[in-house]
Amino acid sequence: MKVDAVVLAGAPNNGQLKEVNGEKWEATIPIHGKPMVNYVIESLQNSKTVENLIVVAPLEIKDSLPPHVTVVQSGDTLTENVFIALEALEKKNMMLLVTSDIPFIHPEAIDDFVGRCAELDGEVYYPLISKEANQQVYPETVRTYFRLKEGTFTGGNALMASPEAIANSRWIMDEVIFKRKQPWKIFRLLGLKFIIKFLTKQLTLQEIEKRASGILGYKGILIISPYPELGTDVDKPSDLALATRLIGSVQGKEA
Image 1 (cartoon, rainbow, N blue to C red):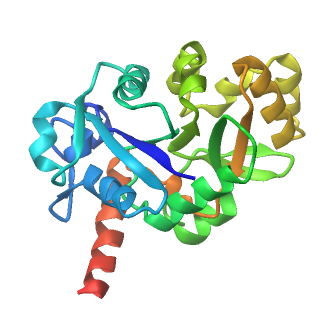
Image 2: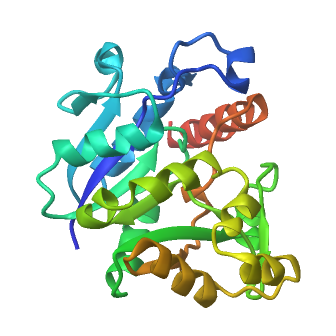
Image 3: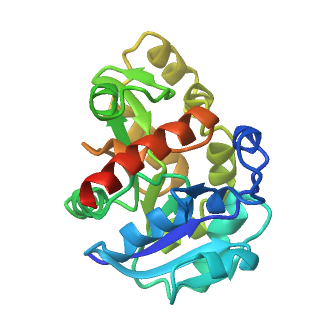
């Protein structure tokens, strides 16, 4: 399967990271002299499954990005940027949406996720990473976890979907994106029965998929990825310090 990848890089640096770095945009916060978003772009460029790549970002950062990257002007919200990307693509492939703040991502993680999606018949795919997998690789990160019958998980910072499913899901996208850091609020969208099951840790992955598919009108599938890099984002000073240290140690070994 080939996909069209979209890097969502339009967020202003007005959150916790502003305390330690004065860059105007989150995407251009440097890690070892390289804008954070460039780690994501380069991994997608080296992926075997990515056919086309666009970056939705302020045009003023274009010169900071790798050469020959297609950049389209971002809007004011994450949802708006998704639809800007949709309009910029030919809509012949599945769309892989990723955020600009996952600098640990690498081609193997991307290709593994796309490959797992290709094996299942769906229209919207979202990665989950188990608490065990995340803590094994990045024990120092602080993540938001939720407990299901199958185990404890955190969500990824990627999503793959058909262009049609994205085009017809704006209302639910607004809800989910706004509440993405608070998964218990997302579960409220599923109804009282699911809230009770979630609170009693009896809610299953299959039940979420079935209910979400009914709400969306498109078949949604949750993909358990063994790669925590899909969900390890940099959105607070401790994350940036960790990324600086770990990426520096990898570059030191490669040198």
